[in-house]
Image 1 (tube, rainbow, N blue to C red):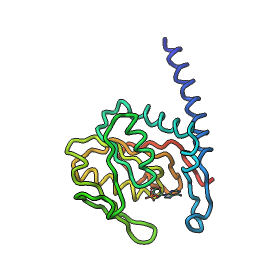
Image 2: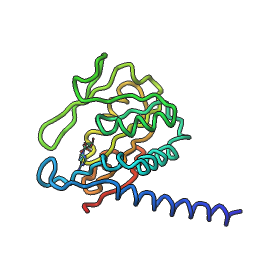
Image 3: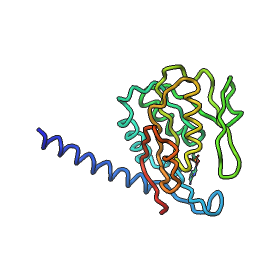
Image 4: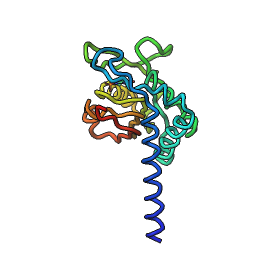
Length: 193
Ligand code: AMP
């Protein structure tokens, strides 16, 4: 019995490793965009590949289907793509976290630091209720500023951030250090290559 169980998980582990390698290869890197020194990780090449996009959502689904999540909060704009597909799969409400001035209803907002200056994101006041278990999702974590602000918005409305999920983690920018105490899930990591 134990041997069978171990064999199953070994095969699954190897399969996941292969899928993640394929996913990583499906992400295009554009050096020096939008400005010199930035390695832009472009998920448009991933979503243009139906197999890669499907695998990506399937892994997220497997990760979160039994976690008693009540809502998915997705961050503008590329987070919407993955958040929407996953919300549909898990049959969960999708909440949008948007840049300042884009949401039509009553909102609360949160400032966060950029490399130069600050930015602001917002959420509808009635989008999260006290006691909601929320998964917050974006395409990528770099410095971690955006996701931290998004988590604060959810928490200000009484929601609990059950986990934060990303397609891409940028190892060198140490964004994950800002997320101590949160459950973090990334599909692929880039380490400067
Ligand atoms: P940060 O707040 O620094 O973690 O930045 C995360 C947000 O900025 C995400 O919504 C990403 O879409 C975007 N972003 C930051 N750095 C990159 C990058 N190198 N490639 C693609 N998107 C990026």
